[in-house]
Amino acid sequence: MRAVIQRVARARVEIEGGIVGRIGRGLLVYLGVGKGDGDKDAEFMAEKLVNLRIFADDQGKMNLSARDIGGEILLVSNFTLHGDCRKGRRPGFEGAGDPGPAEQLYEKVAELIVDHGVPVAKGVFGGYMQVTSTNDGPVTFLLDSGKSF
Image (tube, rainbow, N blue to C red):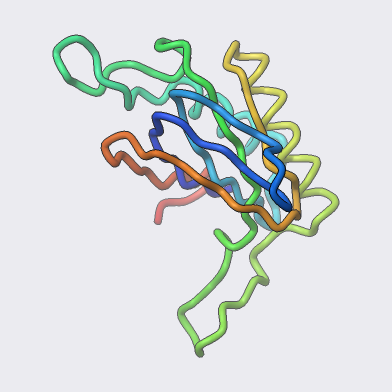
């Protein structure tokens, strides 16, 4: 499971002109489920997202998590995070998870985040979305549940 995590002042997802998910201060997370990902990956990702200390404390140091600041998470499915661009000119997506199981794991991550006490807004799995965000920093991290980048 892979994620691109952006610290944001606000973010939203639209489909066909209608807003389907919106947050204030918190994290915009693009989440890609890969082949072989399972419940342990979902648990790792949810725990990491709510507790990752990337918000500034009173001294300006990254010491606070989304949970600490009362932040929210906008979770957007993104299979292209498993795209392989190393060969040729068109990405290959063999590493992306199959849609059915991938959607179940995406939903599981969202449920686990809520279980950790952080509100979640979501995009639509497999939908064509327009994502708008106001990045805070910018602060952006890459996270992989099984390997490093």
